[in-house]
Image (cartoon, rainbow, N blue to C red; front, top):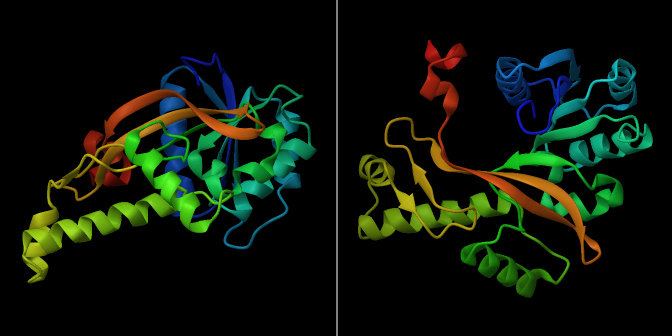
Length: 247
């Protein structure tokens, strides 16, 4: 935002639970380090789905260049997007950005044309242009119908099954818990629909690409256009030994 989009001020809004706090803290650290200024910290009550209007109106009144939003997918994401549109925040010059939870593929088309221009960063969306993903999307539509689509949760299940198959083959189907864990350390899967992945042998986190995407309208549907890729991303909190991860 600060370096490539010229954003100088931002508000952060998030579901008030651990992942929301982690995500927005990470954004704030990086944004301020790059010269940006966070002008508001707005937690949404959690777990019950709130009325987003008073929270987003507060942000609109502050007139930041952008609002960074972290919420769970599904109804939370569509609720935030509807409120952003209803309050005409785009027309007020406030860009909406966040992780790909807010552009979940299964909910994307219901957001309508007002979502065009939204910028997200995530490890998967159904419009990724790679052979494995094209095969998955085609098979998914054949099985469930032309309007159906995989999303990031679907692809995590897909990769999880690939991991199980790897362990079964490695151990000749004689599953031993310790040997199974050892077989997964450093496991690489080049044919994932999200791009190549690896299980870090030290942290056991998934190492994967992150895709910067912009929502555009293409052939009458919302399309996630990849405009940048960061390769083989690890858990940077652990890598940099910052915050609670460094303790």
